[in-house]
Image 1 (cartoon, rainbow, N blue to C red):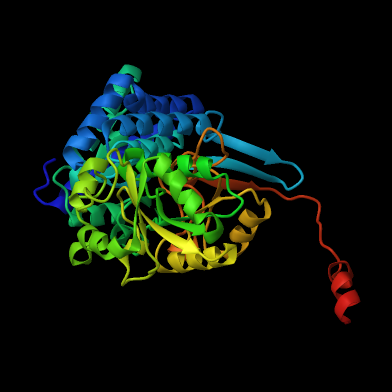
Image 2: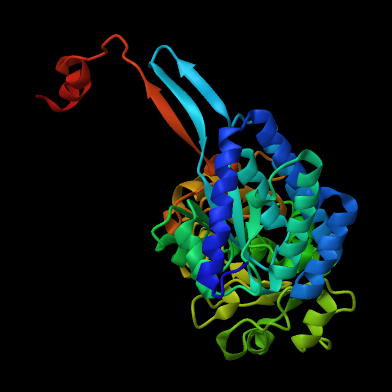
Amino acid sequence: MDGSDGVGRVDQLFARARRAQARYEAEGSQARYDRAAMAAAWAIMEPGRNRALAELAVRTTGLGNVEDKVTKNHRKTLGLLRDIRTARTHGILSDDPDTGIATIARPLGVIGAVVPSTNPAATPANNVVNALKCGNAIVLSPSPKGVACCEALLDYIHAEFRKIGEDPDLVQMVPPPGSKADTQRLLELCDLAVVTGSQDNVRRAYSSGTPAMGVGAGNVTVIVDETADLPAAAARIAASKCFDNATSCSSENALVVVDAVYDAFVDALAGEGGATVPAARAAEVEARLFPDGRLNREIIAQDADVLVAKLGLSDAVPEGTRFVAVETGGIGPEHPLSGEKLSRVVALYRARDYDDAVRIARAILDHQGAGHSVGLHSADAARPVALGQTLPTCRVIVNQPHAFATGGSFDNGMPFSLSMGCGSWGGNSIDDNLHWRHFMQTTKIVRTIAAREPSVEEIFEGYWAEAGR
């Protein structure tokens, strides 16, 4: 870039992106959009590049572990390709003679995507694939720790573009080292801001004057009731909590267990490598996990052996411990264990009964994580529906490993995504998983049809019968 300051550099970058997007749209077709999206997907899914990105991510961010990132890069992208495979994003989508309305797919323009260090390859790749599928260009703004991974990903995408003759200016990133000024300018210039990660960035996106898709804070609370299959629940929770060292916003952060099965469930957790830390040591764990009230960067998303040592629990947990469950009853700002921990630590609450478990879950959501999701391990089919009707949450995940299920799984119907909208409860404009449909807009062609004007009597007859005229 020739610009000497960040704003100048970003302006020039967007000028190139706009020219590329205008050509992409003017000369576009469904086949071209699909081919470009496939190229970007193969850039991360090709096994050698996938592993190189996973290794680079762990080396440069210090977060997560390589094998799980390889799995995440593969499955998240494969699932996304499944979701978009038959999606129509170009041309006339429908033409309804009954309404006289034809609907035409249109790109949004240039997407500005702010992506986190927790998933420095999978999240930008997901955004790039969605953007290209719908006819857009995209400019990425990685977190400082994610710059190297984002650069490598773009190199791989551009290598695939060269094979198919596609314009590399369709996919760009803010030049390193980046800054808050760069990110702010990106938010101001783009046609849609997509922000995952820092809640400060989400708030800035919503106040930038640009249409924005931001996602709320995660702090997943999971209820285990007296009807649950305890060994299965423990296995699912352990698999989810340990995956990529709990970097996911969908990782369990609080377990609320009904008293009648509490002891049996703790035993089941132990069988899965989950060590329970008694309430008497909770303050000690909390102090080490949140020194000065902030998450300890030496503990975030670390392997279990590092976690145990840093928490001073080597004398308190069995060898081979995979994660720790800390008994607590506190909820709120004065009790940071009740918030998101981004580590192999889960808060463990004992509830008197199921109603008390729901009360505790609500209190935790009111403190942090409202709108995101809750989990329920239960054999009672009515309870998930009741939670969905009463708790401030956009998702109720039933009898599944939460981190795998929330963002789409091959055995549930959620769209594959790394960004979960949290509705009004989380201060978001969407309540769905961010997916391809959010990267497209439509134009309606409206023609006249035979008039369908009802009489006043037709409209009000039911109301008049009930309430009188």
